[in-house]
Structure formats: structure tokens, C-alpha cells
Length: 147
Image 1 (spheres, rainbow, N blue to C red):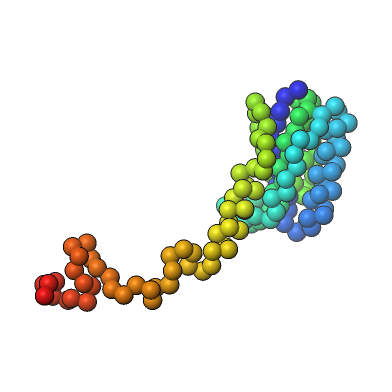
Image 2: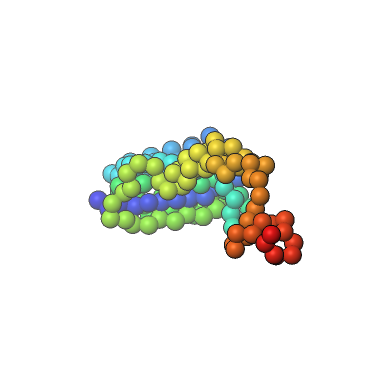
């Protein structure tokens, strides 16, 4: 069967539980038509780069699907009817990505960055005694003449 990556965006005023219920409905449709969901990732509420139906944010969900084309077409049809779904995109792929998606890896990377502290590995500014320019002169020598 063909493999698909399907991402859909839902209005931000819905709760995460309601988004999971929608995902459950779409999963049931796919399984009913002989397919299966390989991976289901909820990416959370994210900001949109431009307004979509007067919304600046949306719930993002990724589904990796192994199903016939008719099953995916039916899910897309139901999403077009549903007023809560803002956008969707389905892409046929040669193979499904194993492990977490790029969006989930990005959030892990962001969490690691937060653990380093406010200045990261650079240290505080007070640790530096003097600053030198490219020619090796001290910064506090205004005339530019070395003594």
C-alpha cells in the first residue's frame, strides 16, 4: 500500500483532548478502509506565519499513514467538511520516517538549549578583563597609539 505523511491544523480554541478525538475519528476511517496509522504526533499549538481563517495559531498533528488512496481521500473529504480543521496537507512518500519527526527533534533541541542557562556556554561578561581590537591594541587606548 502507498505511504503518506498527513499534517492537519485545527483551530486554537479547541482543547488538546478534542484534537485527539478528531485524530481518533480519522484513524477509525483509515482502519475501516483497510489502512493503518504508523505514527501519530501531536505537535501542540504553534503560531502561524499568516492568518488562516482569522486565526493566528493552530493545533498541529502529523499522521504517518499506510493506506489505500481511497482511505486518504475520504479523510481529506471529512476534513474539508469539518469547520474546525483550518488546513491539511498530504504527501505521498517512498518510506515513512522512523523515530520522531523533525518538529519533535526541534523541541528536544530547544529544551536542551534552555538547560544551559541564560548565557549558555559563553560565561558572564565580567569574566573578560580587557577587549582588544584586531591589531592587538587595548580598547581603552583612545589615540590608537601603542605605549
